Image (cartoon, rainbow, N blue to C red; front, side):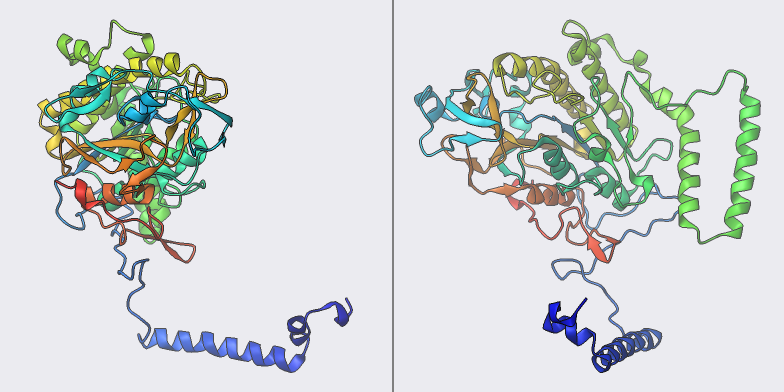
Length: 499
């Protein structure tokens, strides 16, 4: 290429004297860094965002699930995340807006003409009546009558907002802190930081909906760039983990001898390569899988549950899907009882787009589709929370009820559904460390935007980590030259919701 087509900077690179000068200075800089490192004169600490020294858990590759200390003492030692893919309509459940009744059927004043899926229709009042509930008088709709009975135990966040209005990215953002793929999930961060008390079961279990995985699939409970030991193990009451049963051609004695031989071979190999963390982690995972052959069937065996428990959770008497989800709720409680650190319970899947049938994504006929999802979710979830409270599990367990964004206060042009609303939505917390019968933040008069105390997903995740005794600014993992965090370089703890 002729030099006349190059920039001035490009021409300087072709100059031999400039090239040698630059190369020489670069080599000298690298040499100086090496000399300083050898003399221990480099900075002792790297800093995470926020100018705080990072806290990287000391994970023994041979025992990655060993319990580790919190950054500071907190009541919550375990966490149950109830996640509802598809975007639950806040204005039809927990966020009461009288203005929607007053303006029902009118064009939205000052609101957008076009939203995620197309033209906006008219303002629509809630599809279900709101009534005051509990001693707090919290207004909740008739769509969720069982959860409505427990509002005095809940801490609502009404001004949540997110960075996206697309489901895959919304799920990623809520569950991993990033809209992109490849980042560790909340559960992985917690188990990386804290390990688990029960060494016979996984530290992190994801209980998928009977209908399948959510839109972002295993990314919702994946380990991203964290060690593979910290990914969620997914199974549910209907589908146990694969390959737990011993082959029929192998008796228990032969199985034991095989495991003993593997243990000796693994120990010998580790002796030759003591610094191989990946090998040690893989062996630890296989050993956990071996222990799960007895522990998982035991925890999944619901036959010992009482008849009254099955009735309370609604295992029978409703739709088949409610019965399956109810069993998943009982399984979640049993896992928490066994000391599993993180349990993520899904209500809704997305094998083919959802459309309000497999999840809460009600773009049309919301009266029918939200009612269908509520019939599945409401009674079993309320029973699960009540059961945990009665057994004393909420004394040390944080419960999170969450969805990826909200829905619009007006209908879509089809006149029967509500479009995605990333600018405000509602989630709630209960259990260890949070206020009861409390509401934080407000959306505007239409439930369209966060108006009072806007709370980002970063703030939400920062608060969840804080409730688990973890500093979101200091819990890091060094990856590709960066001290990575669940909250990236953002987020503030919402102090007002702390008990």
